[in-house]
Length: 185
Ligand SMILES: Cc1cc2nc3c(=O)[nH]c(=O)nc-3n(C[C@H](O)[C@H](O)[C@H](O)COP(=O)(O)O)c2cc1C
Image (cartoon, rainbow, N blue to C red; front, side, top):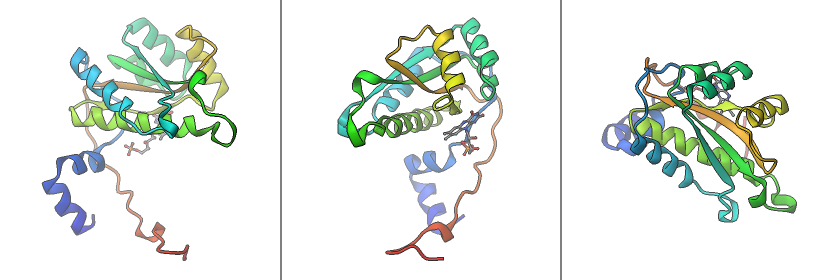
């Protein structure tokens, strides 16, 4: 790791939280306390969004039967069956923009999802982004299990809980991918 980054991490918790977040796929059976649930949902809704449309709807799933049915139907979200809860981040078509901005909601929901993951990590919880959109089959599974109305687009499913295991963050630092004033090889 870069020396400067290491120094900043040592003295700045908010920065350290960003750098040290990892995907968590194994959870203890401990439920997530209601105030922690509120805190991570609040973090999600603090995200920036195009024209401040906030086009998200957050479906909290903590019914073990529903979590099991979601895990059964989703190829890459099997860990949801073991999680005490999951948040299904959905887009609300009624708040999507038009024209060239019509797909900005995808970026908005990405920002909200990352905020949720960072909020969870900051509170000692863990979670993992599992993709739904743009896979029509996965979106249909979730819409069916949760009986979602037509105007909601399931974007991702984020199992959340107390981590049962920890792993070190991956080193994703690639200085060769930074280009100043022009793209250079
Ligand atoms: C758009 C997106 C889709 C992802 N889909 C899945 C998924 O379906 N299942 C899963 O276990 N992890 C999924 N992940 C998590 C990535 O595998 C993980 O973020 C990546 O390997 C880097 O690891 P880290 O989050 O621990 O830094 C997804 C992440 C993103 C951003």
